[in-house]
Image (cartoon, rainbow, N blue to C red; front, top):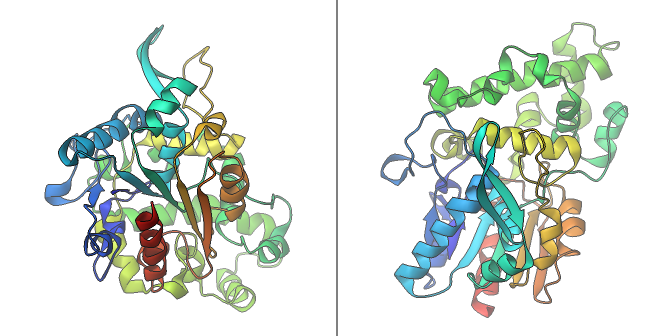
Amino acid sequence: VILQHGFAVNFVTWDFPGRSFAKYLADRGYDVWVTNLRGHGEGEYQSGPNRGPGNWDFDTFLVYDIPAMIKTVTKVTGKKPFWAGHSMGGTMMYAYLGGAYGKLVSTPAGKVLKMFSSSKVAKEHNAQIRGFVAVSSPAGLSFPVSLKGKGLKGLLKYNYYDYDLLLQIAASYPWEKIKGGIFILTHNETIVDKLHITPPVWANNFTAHLLLNILSPIIYKYLGEKFPGDLGEFVHFVKKHLGVGPLDFILNMIWNTKNTTKKDIYYIIEHGLDNFSPRLLHQWHMWLRNDTFQELCDYKGCKPCDYFSGLKRITVPTLLLVGGKDKLVSRKNIKDKIYKIIPVRDKKYVVFPKAGHVDILMGKNAVKVFETTYRWLKKH
């Protein structure tokens, strides 16, 4: 079984102390391979290239990283592996099984990696694995409702009171006009390597930029008239009407804080939060802005390869898992855009009511996810 991490994290999400998905499966007889994408990892488990300017993206993973992992595991074990991916770790496999592949093509700017997709390649890719488990893995980024202009009532009504609105605003915000803050993330180096700072400090700085550049305009737009300049009154209002303190308000974007502890969260921030490429961040942002799931095509005349269409070519047994408290990945995205689309007869969709986006793997109720996955793997 290959366990693949998601965006901006590493293998620690699968091997969390005391609640390790990897050890759970290993204890039950599985040969478990916990992987790190290029530039990710910690200590002796860090994958090359060495940390530094990162110019890779989602497409790079499809062409180079995924095939290398599958080829290595198959060669060493002599068996076709299962692939289990969390968040982007599963999203990559949607495109890969859909037949995505790349070629170097000549452009006015030089040779670049161009993505294509075909049913022939899809058959080859599907034949490489035994089954596929996607944990909180969306196809692109989309949400069940648009909250633009709905204000706080909309946030409360649809229970996407935090990340959904942030993303809706972020998608239409003129980031190209910002010279500081989050703009540094879309420049030519990652923030970790550019500033040479540790992950916990990076997390705090990123959160600060998030608050200053995204949350503040939201406050001004929706609550400015009611709370002119009085942040303390706003915090009191949030706590009273949303039932959470301001810290939980932020953390709930990624975690269901009732399903984990702050100690566990800080451990992930210190050891699991990891490097990512600005190109990759830009690609996810484009998916969000345009409601797409496609190649990052950034040279003149390039027609991006659409990964959505490849979902209809997935043929391996598939298990889709998602948290009922996940504010980052909409259950509707997974059910309507993936489960209902893939033509696999042997497919299953399971919601874990108390789980958030990251704590679905390491939270207090994570063992239920482990058990469900183990039973499915054993059956297949």
